[in-house]
Image (cartoon, rainbow, N blue to C red):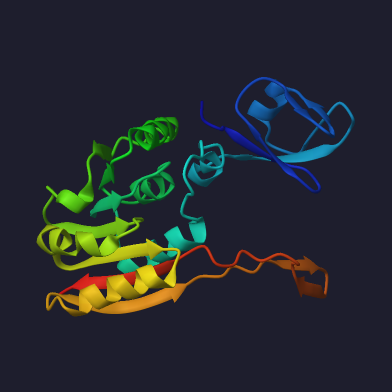
Length: 240
């Protein structure tokens, strides 16, 4: 079932699906949550603000299996490739489906390639929980080929992304993007060197995104003690 409401306490937020919500700050009646138009209170007289839940809220309850791509990296893919509601996208190395679901939330169609059945089951469950109708999962190894044509973006989360280059060349439309997510520098190096030997691809850039939260308390502002550092490198390539 989907999360319907988000409740904001003084220091913590809570997600509500149905029924009464039990928190460390007291019980909040389900009827109060569902009809709230102003702050509501728990039985311990603690106040909560209530808002409608959205897609991002519901991703927090997705089942995790293999290591999932982080939202900071997914956002870079969206921002740097220009995909939109008319785009056709391939996501290979689906895993638990985190990247697949985020892409499906903004594009026309996502084709997900995953060769491990146990991961496909997790992804299928997550896609269904978000009620995404535009994802077509495939029990297939993208190293062996791509059946789709005129694709706007191919996103890879694979151990050997360079194996996909000849297939991506045939599948991508002119100006389309091939993006590889890799945790290690040797993977990036091998992928880039392979790209340089193909005259139909242009290396755009290789980036690493580091997220540093800041604490704001009046005019006292300082970075949090923990940052979200290295998760992976993103290599952006464009078909020309």
